[in-house]
Length: 277
Image (tube, rainbow, N blue to C red; front, side, top):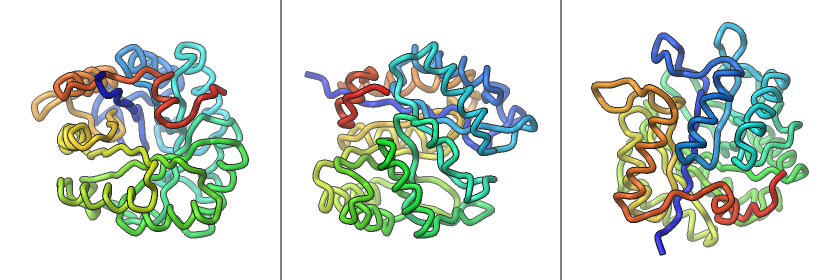
């Protein structure tokens, strides 16, 4: 039987703008439509941010609610994962979407340098977000930008703040962060599985590293992430015409590696999320 692979589509993010690629979905309606197209193309998880009327990242819970309700209308079984990320957002409001009980939410377990800023995640903030997710039965996707974040995540598991089995995303290719190299990914997988043997994981790459890391992830037994948040190009010569086009590209890679594309129900089972909210 072909191994089912989860495709996560990060549709918007905090950085890309229309001037970078006109396909970047900014408004609520654009995000809902783009998610529906990505879902039809094979995405079983959608990772969402919201933007204000000027296209800047924000924590407006009303916008999150509109995006989530629209997605549920057109993609009733897709796994909705909201961002608690820090670009352009006040730390006290980064968990705003959690009141809406999404299926999943991102949780970085440490701080890291971004190209022009520090992505700051204090221990108190990490614990507060983890506690809220635990109370609301929201599955964290642990965002790993550095090796220490694996050990921090394990510490939170031992404290009972993150339930097992754990799902991690290893992120490569950010300027000032980790280079997209197989040897580093293999170290991350080895160390994470040493402490968390029931781990599921995704490897993602930023920009031109997106396809490279997807191939490595498939070859090493992981899942994949794509989308205009991380990469606005289909290849070095062409902008991606949509999130769906990037999902199709990822689905074709799965076929190349003899894997099947997991549907949302299969993805929930793989992540031990058997109950839809």
